[in-house]
Image (tube, rainbow, N blue to C red; front, side, top):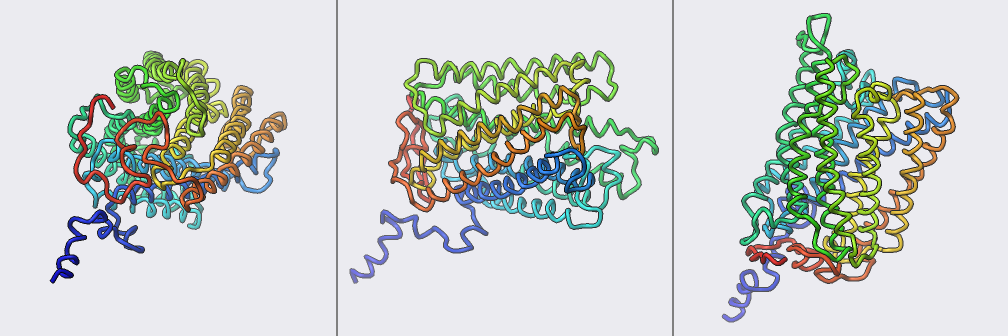
Length: 536
């Protein structure tokens, strides 16, 4: 009789009550509804896409090592350029941020999971479908989309079926983003621990809340733009075909109304990550929390008012040029507030320089350079000179690689012990940082000079005087790409348990609910919501 009783006790009262609910084998991943599992899948997927997009970039740089057509015809070169952009944006950076949101937001706000667990699963599984469509487009007649990641009409109206693949892929990836955004908004607004008001949330949650609203606002606009492209291509409409009474510049307006908030979608979560890392290793509270929140909101609002700075050369009236020029410059104010606050947080702090902190400081330094080059191209007369040159390529890689990617690396090192329960190899982490930092600057800094000298972007061939800088950039690119294999090795090594076991809070200065759960984080956390104390 007693044995029957004992049999029945563990599922209900035993310490491991939730272990029974952890699915096993392939079903755990295919049918995943747990936010940690889905977050992990997002992160693995985005790293695979980073490698694919990076390989395409190395193929580009290989062609550009010397003038003349060396390896790839210009048509194929343009396919590589386009697909590199699309894969990196929609396949690597955005899913990586959503992976972090899935993993960390429920832990940071004391929620048991994301609000819509099944939708969460669906929004992930759309991604591989979109990625396969993009990759397959190389193998259809005429090859992949070669009109640039912006897919400008009228060129995109003349492409082969690879263009249709890209349109459908963007639709699918956009739908995934919209579902992810809805999930994040509802989770943050409805599932915070008792006692946690909005102004007591970690800044990573704030940055994602604002980002999710941006996604909801602009993804349907992108869907509209590419749907109009589709109907122009196949159904005889003439939205963007001048011969039929359409306007190719209309496409640019609709696209960039999505495209400019999009670049902030890719940087705001990074701001949130850096705002978590810097106070931890400075061992101080973040300076100016409220102003950081207001700055994030200001950046998001202003991002809707500046889209046409991508179009200064299309012949807009001077009044419009002035509006978009001054609007763009205004964004530097809330961004400057953020940089000031990070610096003030570090000021006289008890600083140590572990790998997450190195990436956070590297981010602040190099992102600021990218911000300044952004201010340069915001000035309409200058932009007209450097538009579509390598100067622009240098600018956006400084904000997207040194911005988004550096923050993602820093945040991975920061939260990895929490995810897997083992400390990563600190010595190798520092090696990864310095190799990434130096090789990044070797790759992209010369591009400023190439652009100022008049080297146009997206060209497979160039005049002989540009050779030296191109060769330096190519060597840097290979170095940068290979450095990321070291990152993969460090993460795999920690996940497989080859580092020191860590406590619930491995960092001396870290605060927040995520550091109250054991490391590695159990499959189910906060089944009973914790009571949040304002002092934390």
